[in-house]
Length: 150
Image (tube, rainbow, N blue to C red; front, side, top):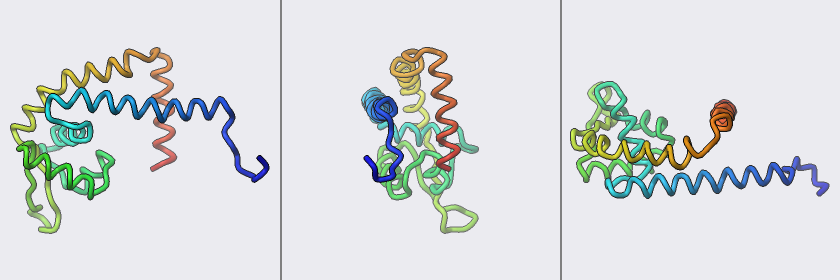
């Protein structure tokens, strides 16, 4: 094609498509692994980040950025999770406009129950499935991707 676009080579196109399909299938696998615990992969990420935060709480805006979800999507997920007793929302005491999400004891219990299975699934589908040298290369590649997309 002579339209001036810098098209991918056949090899680059194959790797790119494998990345897209592989990422989607990996996420589907991990999501299915969490279903017995009543969680979705995005909800698991919310619980993990809250459990690691000071006082197990975060402002919703910060949480949205941390788990890479839009504020709207996060609000829907948090509403579901709150109705399941996994977390609570409160108004920020400092500015009254901000909203704080805090993991509950039930949320910590569900996370503790799900974590071993989730880690085993991550190992099965990615960490142990990929040659250690390739695994390190993926890590280096993702750091570069993150540096050009932030």
